[in-house]
Length: 339
Image 1: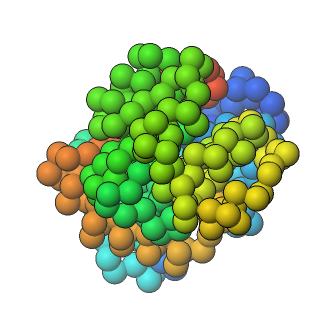
Image 2: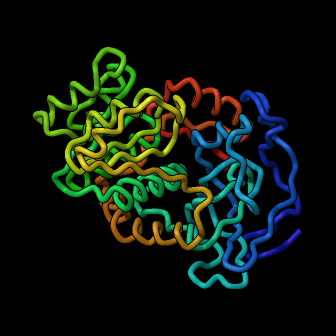
Image 3: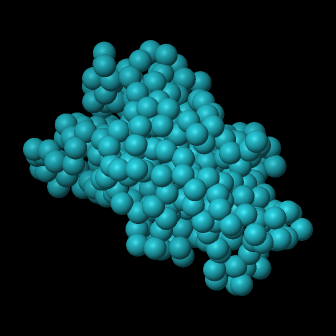
């Protein structure tokens, strides 16, 4: 057991393991060694951990952690720094941070590269802070860096009440874009409008291509953020106007489709996509700097922030995954580790 002025750091911790790939009941508490931060890493005593769709995909055996990352699920945490790697100078013991991690979040302790740690915005609790990293890093990287969304442009965001969706709506509006979003019920559509969406389309009762064209007076949208794929791909292309950009961040309905690419050429479209987990620490650190500079002031002023649907205990990780897969949630699901 290691001592510091914050109290002892145990040798062992409770973490959630994937016993074998499969359904949510394959998640179970286990004892693991507390990790040691090296180089530019810090050790965080975790207070809360966010739950994300990639965690579910990992549990099913379809999204393995990158080499060198923990096999414990969990890509975002908030908590207190209790140990520093030898190269860390930006933070001190006792600092409260939120962090984007490559794995290991569903645990009492987690290491994180210092460049992927951000200060907790003054207006937020640690619970709220844990709901920021994965969605804010992802949305900023894809909407603003890859697709270069500008003020006055129109973006179509699928899955408007997901963690990504609720974040994307707020960020796009905060930077002056017009926002169209899709959701699966009238209640969810209202939640999207409450977050600032200009148009919320119930994809079960309305045609989002037709509604998007009406909204833009047939001009078409400038950007589409899609995590659905499948038969949405051709429809996304139909929604886009001249010089439009289509960005994929997941393929919940499949990554293959029969697509007519002629509109891509005629409308000069750009089709892109990315995953964040395997990108370099330097890449993620730059996103972190952009967020602190451009987004954190907006959060601290109360102009945007996370929408948390439900918080469960670490031992209820399986229930959290079942809730995620039900798609009943509006916003983020969080695990609590604080006693």
